[in-house]
Length: 305
Image (cartoon, rainbow, N blue to C red; front, side, top):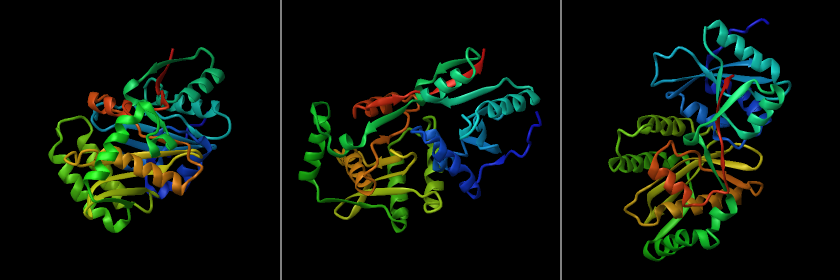
């Protein structure tokens, strides 16, 4: 097989090429968000190529510069899967590397096993599981399980003179000012903090090109929280960032509820909200579980047996 060598760093200029294949994949996974690919490129450095109708993504982790071997995402797109897998395998072999894929969803695992029975081993990566919620439940916090979230919202509404409005580009400087305040109370040695700062900055700088949407929570006209995301499949909206000041009790449940209301008000077809992974952070995992996800979107590391 002739191996194409036109791998190049990912760029916003590649948007049409990438997004058309992501839409064909129609995955609920946050890994198949064009905005995420661009915003987090300082941490997960990506090079792309197109093989037939599938997108090939070669990924390196910036914190491991000594590791020369890439791993791949699932080749998003349409058409035959086998030629794309063979292409990635041969590319790895030419670099003297073992073939590996990460971020493989359950649906993709089943497809790979069907196409290549017994050829791969699949290892769950719990820290990368996405939390998938019913949008309607987040917009109301209905039911016994979410009564504590409703109570937080009720107290917030009684305590503060608040409103929630759509995030527009002119609000971005104030959102970054809030984010700087939020960082004051955060352990900056935690994995991903610096990369998240870069990701949020890149997102705001390329707001329209990345087709991001957001909302802000205000008290007495001042922004105390913001949320940012995008639609990633026909029925799923991915929330990339939620930041609020903890000094306002109930700010996070309010931000979550009001943004969910905005999402389904704008897009009635949205059934699920993906609030992404917990990065293995215990407090973040506890928080995301407290909103009772409809399910966890599993992700696997794939290697040849």
